[in-house]
Image (cartoon, rainbow, N blue to C red):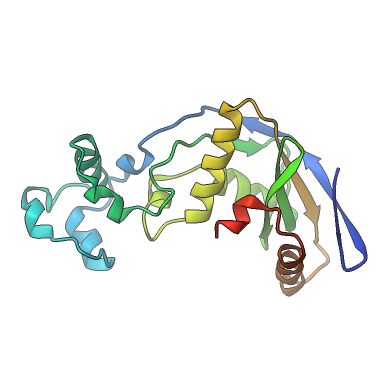
Length: 198
């Protein structure tokens, strides 16, 4: 159990096993092949980017283009990615099928690092969210939070630290109650390092 006291109530986060897959997965953004450079430019604002300098890549898949830039030491590729979009990632999932909603907490070597919420279920937010980084997550319009959490967990694993997931089920609560409880916890406690980077 991981206990957090808020508004004179003690919340008991049930520790849940995580199953870990490969670690140190690099260049995930390179695998985004379903959109080309010109299409992405047309639907996303990329400041200070001149497509005319890369005319030969106009019809290239965006992932291939950015990978080529990276491997040619052209840091222009970073303009397309969120600030955690070129990190090393890992894969992990919940071993139990948790179809509950509520709050969850990543705990590294006994210290809570991140508190999040799900208004759907824990299984989806972990297994299809922060536990499995897709190429689209890495881009400016992707899931920066998923990338940040996943890269932090990957780093913890590389440093032989134990990573646990705590869940606090709130199936009988309204979505507003879940949102407010997370907000109240973060207002009272400032030791959630990965939240503090938001």
